[in-house]
Image (cartoon, rainbow, N blue to C red; front, side, top):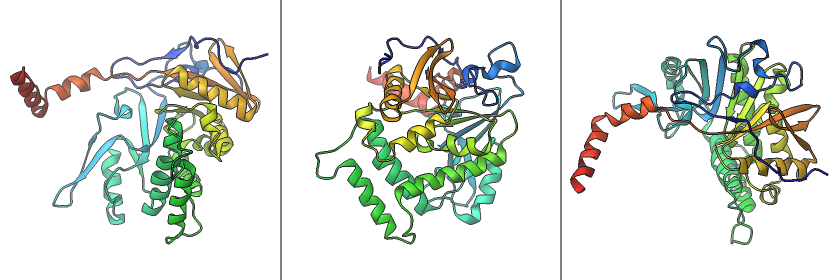
Length: 333
């Protein structure tokens, strides 16, 4: 009988060198054959070529957007964001714009034009929908559970807090909307933009627990697309994860990807246990790593470590602000 807990850590680990993005192309499977054929089956090597396209999807774009007193918009890379790392590949980044109060409608066209220079495609979410999606479902429901911070016996249990926030939202201008409905609505908005930007052969790489249903929405219309999903957060144990009422939907959404990446093997092990205990799925050790068997196909589970862009790090060290901080530290010592 197969154990719920893998006995050994998978031998396949995807890593990145300085300045490279963590593209797990070597192990993303081809949906066209629904077997363990690798993404690199069109070439002898296991790397993405410079002509290959990658669509990097995250809820927030890895940029810093500001507006001066004259109303002019300014955009720069957010070097603290992993997804801003440099690469020689043809990358299109899709996500929303982090700007306090939201981007005014009359300014969206201008900002979109500026972001095109960064190969970024912005998605503008209605403020009320954003609140229900991000503040209510993602932050008050998913985030505590994924970080094993479930509150059951306190004055306001985790699930109740989310429901109360959803009720407050329903009392607003959109009574038919709830937190889960907002979560699924945002997935559909992202799906539409991705389909508009997608070209045959592109790799779609989704990041974060904000978009766990997106692989399902995409695979229904882009049957041949290669889809990867990477979680930047921990993944909880099955005892914690099963407290979510939408646990089945979330797991099935994730399993619609061809590859799912986690930071640590501990998180991958928790995910495998959830798949077995909640959905009754089997997993096996294959030559390319651990595969979960779902819907007649195999989903590869990998552990991918974050890299550091040394060029950016050295550049930041030379800025006047950092040089001044270094000087002040030297004075103290």
